[in-house]
Each structure stands twice: as C-alpha cells, then as structure tokens.
Image 1 (cartoon, rainbow, N blue to C red):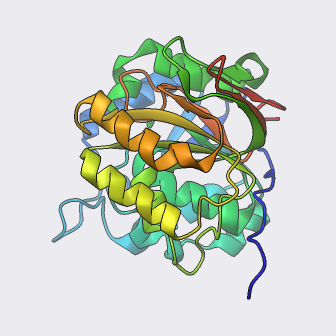
Image 2 (image 1 turned 180 degrees about the vertical axis):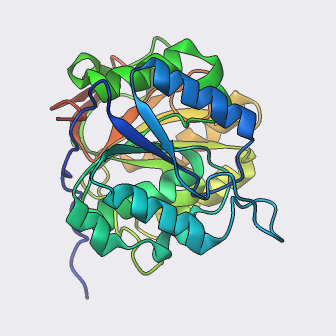
Length: 315
C-alpha cells in the first residue's frame, strides 16, 4: 500500500512588475487574430510596459487549424522567453487548445534555472500552471490573456491584473459581491487549480500533480454541459485527486447550461467532500475575470465569500 499523497506546498513567488519592464507574449495554444493581439499590446504599453511578441505567436499550424503553429515552436517560444534575462513576465495571448501538446517539449530544467517570473493565463493554460507548479516550483497567475475578449473589453478585468502585477499588496483579499457559500465554513490551504476539464485531463500523465491534498482548489470551465461537468468532477473524485482538499472556490461556468442545473451538479459532486465551497467568485471565462494567484497560502471564507492571501501574490 502507498501512503497519502504529498500535501500541496507554497510555491516561489515572482517579483512584481515596475514601469518599463519588458514582458513577453507567447501563444501556447490556439491561433491569434492579429488585430486583437495589437489591441492587447496597446493596453500593456498604456501600463508602461514594453511588450515583446515571441517569434511564433502569429503562426498557424499547416494542417490543424486549432493550433497556433507547431508544438515545438510554441514550446521553444515559451522556453526562450522565460530564459531571456531582460524579460520580467510571460503573458499568454489566448487559450483554446494546444498547451497539453507542447508542455512536455518545454525545457523545464532551463526554466527552473532561470528562476520565477510572473506568468499569466487561464483556460487551456491550466496545463502550464500545473507544470510550473510541479516541474518548476513557481507560483503563477490565473488571469486574463492579452488577446482575449474579456481583457480587451472589461475595465475591471484589466484593473485586477494590473493591480496584481504592479501593486499586489492592494489585492490580498479577493471576493466579488456575487460570491456566496455553496457549503459554509472557513479553510486554509495553498491555492491551485483552473479549468476543471484540463485538471481532469492531466490525471495519470507523467508529470501530473498526484493530489490536491492541502490545497484550496479554484475551479471553473466553459462549454461543458451539466452531464459533462458531472463526468469531469466524478473523474476527479474517483481518482482520489480531491482527497484532502481543504476548500473550493468556484468561478464561472459560461456556456455550460442554465446555472441552476450547473449548481445542482456542483453541489452534488463537491458538497460531500465536507469542506467549504464558495460559488460565483468571478474568475475564468466570465464577463469580468478576476486575477487569482496560484501557489500562495490563503484562507477561504465561504460565509463572507472571500479568499484572503497570506502574502501578496508577487514579491
């Protein structure tokens, strides 16, 4: 018999950004509309940053239209951007699909040696958040992407990311007015998570996280009907991956069907874990998407609908 899975531990936090910082934009997943990328870069410049676009960001795969270029090229862009000593952060351009195809082609030894940097993305980028946690030991940011519609259209989404990058001490407590308890209570743990379907897809992969034990789990998804969400959560439960999780914060469930049906699945599958669960925390694929730190010790209070970080997300 094997013993209990290792407990989720705090990760090394990167340094905050300062005006004039160079930030690299990479495309680990789907193809990027050039006009949306241009608009996102202009926003970053307005923050006083110097964005640098990785060489293959605007590539298109020759036969697979859902990919932003070849797997090795996308992986090389991420590795080279991270290892460039003049780059202070790496921001993803968009999600879609493709991160799982390139994650094992990234030079994780070189990334560990280069040290922590702010890394931002969500959705398909969940696969990379998990890899940075497990294979590099770095804290990351579940947040909006440079060419994504929410980043371009919603001022609250942009301000949440800007404040986290430049003034992280001002966003130690996260909790929109919409947040409320699905299961009451208060819990402490280290934040982890992202897109539920990507977490399930990572199970049993060579470098997949063995367990969420000791973690405060952030979950959201898009385009998964209630019965598919049931399957995803059931898979996480049956695998034992959720054993020992201390609390759960739920974000958005866009295009997943009527929320009362989604909520019934969430309550049925997660309510039996005996831990606090907060719903409608406004992160993920929602019209307003808060930036949520991953790999940071925090307290989840379901009764007040808040997640309070022990320390700022960035140093």
